[in-house]
Image (cartoon, rainbow, N blue to C red; front, side):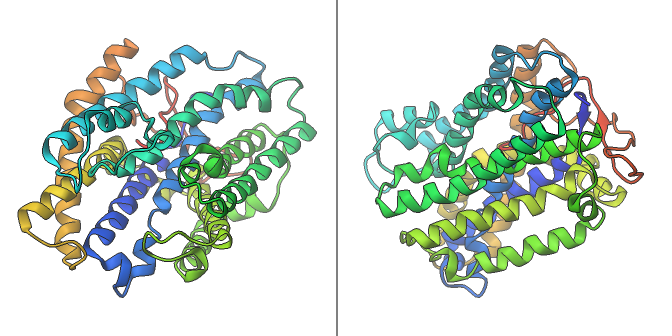
Length: 407
């Protein structure tokens, strides 16, 4: 179980990146503020919740497997090294490109760029740095990376993985999904804008993936019996339909306004809770997918898109700003289609060049593995991820899967 891959998650990573690009283009064009699809476009930041849930699943699962197999958990230092190798190169290139190519509305000193390069900007006061505003979520995710070994030790240590122990830990993770909305409501009520970007407000999104990882391993090993989740796994379209319905609800004023106006505490609570549920609905069918879903999301195209999704996330606001400069389209004056396709195509090309010419070589050298790929192609074979399932795909791999949160 430790070496199982979940190829359908690659496609979800790409869709999450595309959602983030869409909401930012929607804001830049004004269509996410007053267009006919303003509600949907403004809420496509749900891509961040999907990223976080996938990261929680992939990074926590090796700890769960080690707990069930009574073996040593992943070593902390190699784990942190691998996370740094994955995240930092593209991050630093993005910061340099933004400093050189993207103008700001006011004075921005080199210290602001340094804060973004070290992902400390969400804890410090400073001006908005154009081209890098999306990196708040990466700063939050990196703190989760640092906290995970301690959190995993708390959740998987001290007793054997009995059915009762598994259920208790699922209850703790369920509590985390409520903690996030409470934190966001409190941060909004206290008018503490920085606190609304910190990890506690998003711990529930990571906990969704962690809970699915615990359920998947426990169910595969027979430690948990059949439940409603097994039934839902057989009807993925229904689960995604529920997620879409929740997104439509979140697109209403119940989750706050579409602009940068601060929501009420109640709206902040509802939005966070809805995003938690949507992330669960989106990710769950991909951890034990049908053949058709695995072929679509986990095929070669899905692998490549998953590989470059982090680069698309890191570079797309720089590209969007440059496209807007070249076209001369004013802020909030429309032209969504042109801005969207131009940004997606150029960002994907830049991300592909970054991944294949810089990121992957650095990871291979740092890991001392000449064949390393975030999403290797050609290793897939069908096996059953759960008891009594013949349509689930999992894939053995000689390396742990990379977190999907940002690629």
